[in-house]
Length: 336
Ligand code: NCD
Image: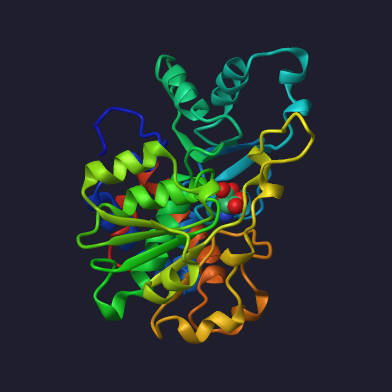
């Protein structure tokens, strides 16, 4: 997926093929080994001290923002941030295109999260036409895509299944707001790259996956099923991927009620009482933040992997940035 001489933007899960996924997982493993010693950490710091990143996050974020910021620190990159566009010249009426082109004048990488689907792609095309194109990484684009979350989810699944044959031939059950959840969309696309994988989508009818994802899955020939039977779905799964209701995308109705309020999600909440019905090797995941759909009492269960997902996110993003900026080869030198 790397075209020589072209700026590598990370915009969508569609662009990752299986060799790329294998490579980023191997690279992430190696980076984690470097981090185990002071010498290794100092070596990682020496990779990109001459490069700067900009984190342009105009939608709320805790994990993705901090893990990208920490990832930059780990490889010695300086980073600047904009989290509130009212502090930039967008406030004076500057177009978002002009603002981002301006940022690109000062930095070597732009990591961006925005509520607008497709904005990253637009900015990437715009920058490609400039004399100094810098790579864009999509850190979440409205309800559309979250490709880097999907990478850390794949890494977490791969590690969790390493003693039981890897991701191939596993049933992955996704639960919650599957229509508007960008993590579900991006991860589902990546799971089509693993032979024999089965996807089970459990949600209230109002939050079923969208037609575009359904068509992608049909085309890829992956086996998948949509159900409202939460209990049956989680009992059959090798991994249960919980998600929250994405009510920030609610369309306000004329009568003042909101879309999400009228949907009963109580049957799609994972509680401690469900644990006995899960497989003993089941992996419980959640991109976080969580609400009532995932009972904190589950945190102590060894099958709960969502806190590991957070940390895996930082390491996977270190690996990704080194690939985007072309220093990944330096990491595969003999280890310290
Ligand atoms: C997710 C997101 O922003 O899409 N969170 C994250 O990046 N870890 C999931 C969510 O907000 O529900």
